[in-house]
Image (tube, rainbow, N blue to C red; front, side, top):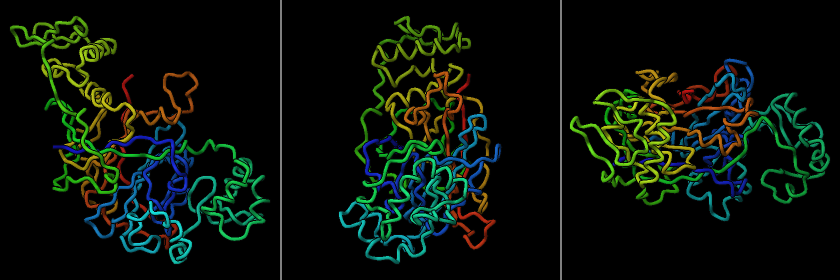
Amino acid sequence: MVDVVLGFTEQDFDKSQLTSNYFPTKVGGKPAWLDLGNIPKKEELVCEKCSKQMSFLIQIYAPFDEKEDCFHRMIHIFCCKDPRCGYYVAIRTQLPQVNEFYPIDADERKYDEDYKTIYKNQPEYNKNRQNTCEYCGCFAKSNCSGCKKVHYCSKEHQQLDWQLGHSEQCKILKEINGDIEDNENVNKKLPRKRVSEFLYKEFDVITESQELKDFPPPTTTATATTTTTTTSADNTTPDSIDKLKIDSDDEYEDDNDEDDIDLDENGNAIYKNEIGKELIPANGGETITNDPEAISKLEDYANETGKKAEINEETFSKIKDKSLIYFKRIVAKDQSQILRYSKDSNYPILWVSDTDQPPSPIPSCSNCGSNRKFEFQILPQLLYFLDMDSSLSNNSSDIDFGILSIYTCESSCQIKSTNTSSSSPSFVKELIFKQDFKK
């Protein structure tokens, strides 16, 4: 049995619960940092190709309860918004259960009615928290000289935020005493700011745990074990990503029915329905075509006959781009999924092409030298929810990818550096592999 956690966007959410105190898994907006005493600086999150600051894309809360120093654990994904760069970064931060920013039982109590009051009544949790930039969410070293209520990482971002609407909010904030954070009455009085082009649209991410029963043929896609060359016996899914767990979906049951498929004398598949015949090997030879339209016809056949998850294995094994077919098969089961998470070494990693897959072995952890292990994937459906459509002619400024696969240190090693050194980051960069669809 292989468990996989699927992530879906949720547009109806309480914005206050997408902040650091709630350890959210979320898309877009500003990052909800975990280690609030070591917030990354904008200079640490720049594209290596164009040197521009990257935008926050998505974060996954996935602690390892079995390790004391990563009871809380967060992985953030950032990307350059210039599609010509195609540059993505995954960073990991973590904290022990006993820390200076959150109560020891914060994750259990975060949805209690009195949870917000903890941070108001016990100021020690806020004492060493650093400020974040109002515009980008990175470490802020200064504040607005007018209201002194909002903070910025640079003069440039202060000017940009002023143009977005802080010029209208500043006078109102100046008259307010005390902290404005989580103050709903204050937020209702403030004029709405214009939407920043630097940030992506914000969503909550809800998760479902399912038992995967549909696997590719043995010779196709590499599993999490063979791809990462790890020998770890830890195949468990972190409790965090499984918090909203539901019963396994029977949609993943393999109820293969071969009533509409025959085999010829050579053992080749023959469809009784003519749809998809272009993919049938001729006289035991290679696949006649790899044309996308032919593949589409085969998928139409599967849909019309109720075999959405099944393609005859003999025929399937001779299709040239087997990875893409399996990807489409799996995605068709839950077409709105944007995230697939599994620590099971038998999890079949999804790819959108048989070529341009990650190197073997996967590069070791840059922090401790240990092996990296597959952890989760970001699916291209995310682009749809971010209003990016590769079929539109006006999408020249939109990012694009086939699938993003993230590999992390198998021991989730302790982060060595701290904010005492301006040249040392307070996070570990993990491996993110971007694979594109073949044109």
